[in-house]
Image (cartoon, rainbow, N blue to C red; front, side, top):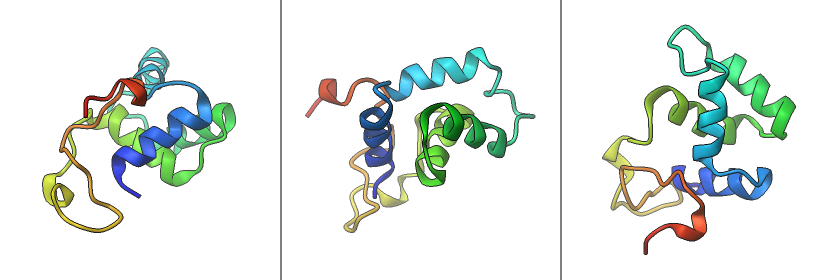
Length: 96
């Protein structure tokens, strides 16, 4: 599953865009460098029922922003992303 596909599925599962979840995380102070991924994963599991894979995709966005490593961009396979910048708004509004 691509990084963007994880984020799109998070929106389907929670009804919230990744950007909205990012804002909630920031309001809780989870974007602080001292907050461990496990704390964020526990929150996402308890409040939204997200598992580790989906949670780690969101942890990346919370900690590092929407920029991802370009190594899978333009490659083939299930982990291929179309861009090295993730779309955080509603997937229905993503430009083609």
